Amino acid sequence: MNTKNTKETIVAGIRTSGKLHIGNYLGALKNFIELSEDNTKQCYFFIADLHALTTPFEPKELSQNILDVTATYLALGLNPDKCVFFPQSQVGEHAFLSWIFNCLLPLPELERMTQYKDKAKQHKANINAGLLTYPALMAADILIYKGRAVPVGEDQVQHVELARIVARKFNNRFGQTFPEPKTYLQKPLRIMSLSDPNKKMSKTGDESLLLDDSPEEISRKLKKAVTASEPGKKSPGEENLMLLLTHFGSKEQITYFADAQNSGTLKYSELKENLARDISEYFEQFREKKQELLARPEFLAEVLAQGASKAAGAARETIFEVKQKIGLI
Ligand code: TYM
Image (cartoon, rainbow, N blue to C red; front, side):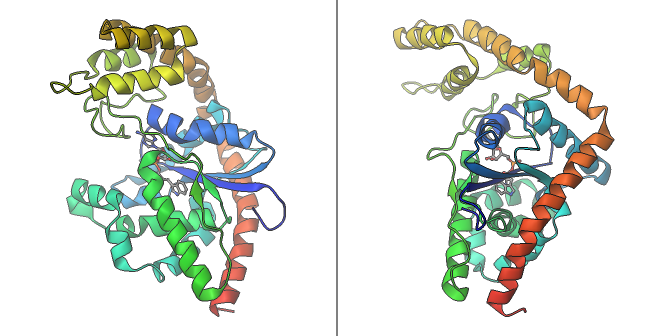
């Protein structure tokens, strides 16, 4: 809870490092929109543009991505009057708190993070310190608003655990200040890649169903989705498509394909066609709305500036308290 009211504080963000996909939607954005409509929650949703600096980027693309992700949030239905919606980089207090956390976190805690190990392998020529301290900034993003619940996909669970460790360390050393945040869902979701269903769907590569994809593109990508399995094992690609169907299909379709799966009569081409139609329809209005919003960059910038000013008020209060507790004031 936040100190001023009894609402549960929810905090989460999305990096601006490429086009958003269906994994980002189901793992995070869909929950953001539902949570922001719930009057018992105080939500802070942001654009993690500082986290986007940890992997290679071009300045022009970055600023375009910020507008793109902003338009995506809004076109999906996030109402900025019902939550605090802002870009992380416009509230400098996040970076300040992350420095304090960097000085509390033992190096091995950071080095054992799976995402760090994966990204370090992927970007061998650019293993920068930000890649390593990424979770300290993420902990700061959450704790600066005293967040208790964090709607994320499965790949971010370890980072939320680290935020809990940081909160505990700070409280033990300097007195009770932060709540210990938890993931919003007990079992966060993981949508898998279409071309390699043993890996998670990610922002790069042809294996991702992007929220911006046209119906033709969705159909093309799904047609190519890998469904092969090893002998005697369940097909991970099939499980992934069935999981998508539970989110985008009708009750009748879900029952029909589950029965076919159980009786061994499932036709992948039929499943893929149905899924392509469902997903295309689901995001039809979104695609139109997003184009309208992208044509109004000043409006998008204004929404972000207003959100940043609201977020900064709360962030400054926490920083003042932190400075007092650690002896900086
Ligand atoms: P990002 O942009 O990499 O991912 C944004 C959200 O999408 C989820 N996600 C998935 N969920 C299900 N299946 C997938 N295949 C899939 N791929 C991505 C991620 O789990 C995430 O919830 N570090 C965060 C951004 C961040 C943040 C924070 C989140 C920065 N500070 C503070 C919460 C709280 C990230 O992974 O962004």
